[in-house]
Image: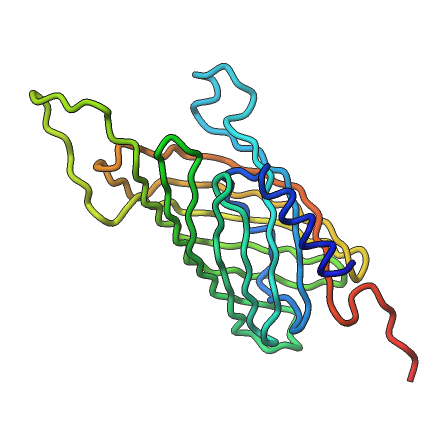
Length: 234
């Protein structure tokens, strides 16, 4: 699959993206010189579902791309909160020949759903995975910091005292488990579950997160010098 065609699909689908936090990747970086694209619908469930009479709290289309820049490093961009974007990268501490991978992942991005609301996000976490042929189970623990603006009340009651911003934002612990199955050299399937647990709250942003469960099922496409081609015999 060519990088040009994949990039067109990525840009076209960006308008349908939403807010979800699934990793959708193993701890092993994309091979140097190759590009990996993913597209994955996701659903979320939390305590607001029953209150609102819904089946799920939120549905989103997650998509992104990652580029292998070194044997142990990749960088990428993924959709975040409407038309926002999140830049991310990871570094693998394990030897390249090991089936195990242990990576540090970090990122920063932001987005908006409109109406003056804005959200900035900075994830930092660790991922571990094990390659067993075409199957790669993976898991991760991430701390996600969120800074939310634009939710202040339109009118301020002079008889009330409002909490000031603390500056640290809201913090969520992301607990992830997933499975990546590359059934061909250029295409694969990924299934991912992420639990979001609030651990830090900033009362000054007029927003409080709830414990949320997110599940995603998607496709992974690989483009590069040898993606989709068989090695020629020596």
